[in-house]
Image 1 (cartoon, rainbow, N blue to C red):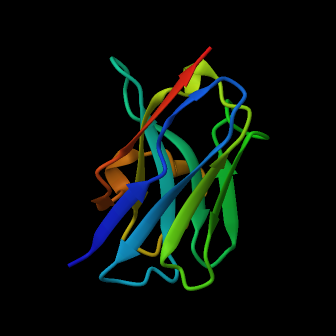
Image 2: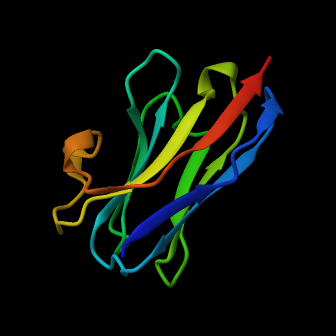
Amino acid sequence: QVRLVESGGDSVQAGASLTLSCVVSGFTYRRNCMAWFRQAPGKEREGVASLFTDGSSIDYTSSVRGRFTISQDNAKTTLYLQMNSLRSEDTAVYYCAVDSSRDPCGRAWKTRGRYTRWGQGTQVTVSS
């Protein structure tokens, strides 16, 4: 059974850093698009960062570019999101997701419907 389990969420002050982890079990996604999404209260779930697991592409939504870094471990079992200079507007539940097809992330990486597996989410709260 494939599972994605996020961890690392916390309540922090603005300007702090956090690293989120997403452990993947039950399958090794060697050439797949994986992404971090977030959902703030009353808002739609939005794409934050994507990574194609063969290392060929990485992308970020504009509001986090330069502050957040997506990465994976060499075994492709864990996806990370390093978040620096956190702002109150980064407050949300963060989810990792994987597209089981081998389609590249491309420009459609923010399309929620393409992702076939999701984690349960981890809460990040940033207070100013």
